Image (cartoon, rainbow, N blue to C red; front, side):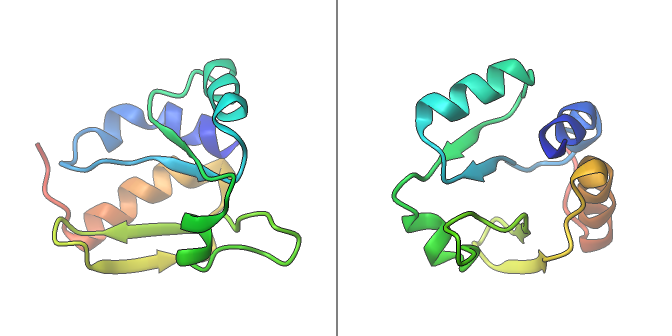
Length: 106
């Protein structure tokens, strides 16, 4: 559902000068198949070793990643962490928050 919401908001998201992606603890093969099945027009990063998800402290006890959204500026500063990401509205919410944070547009 979150992948679909981001896919459906791609035009609005791409109005901003940003790179966006999803990350998963699944394998590259699983993520590639998932991205193809859901027609994702953005990268889905594979982190089966859980190194990145561990560094961002999003791992839950069962070894799955929380659905958090990190807003990071061009200098690498984390401007906001949305720990209440809603999969169904993730695309619209991403656009609204980038506008609120003043992300530049292309």
